[in-house]
Image 1: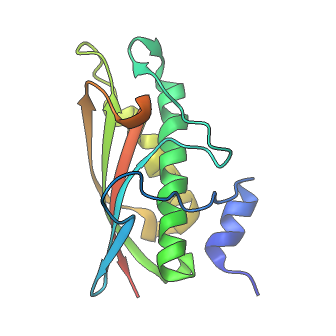
Image 2 (image 1 turned 180 degrees about the horizontal axis):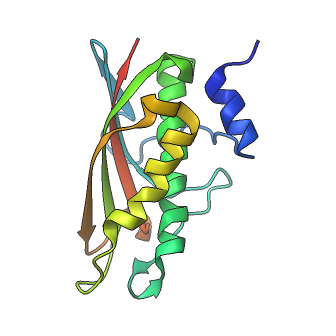
Length: 154
């Protein structure tokens, strides 16, 4: 029998990439009791391609949302690596989205919706969360978006 979250991913035409390895001195996730903290995940596709650029200077909201969606897939990949089964996620408690953007760009919340929408599509009501969406000057590897997460798990 397949897991509900895996079925939803398949129905969306999506596949989890391998959980990305850390690129510096940190761990990709850390569990503390019933909470799983997932380090920031950049917009990296399963083939290694990184969605790069700056919102408001060559990237539009739709491109930013796709980058945020890649971040969310990487968050889910880390959760699966930590838990073995995405159905062990009780609730996404918090997403914090960092959007590489020009000073004039103010649609960071719309960009991070790409991740928020995916969490709800895959996890149902357990994907609803609190959130912050912050504009930054640059991100690692030139990524357009980076998102970290706090999950309640069983």
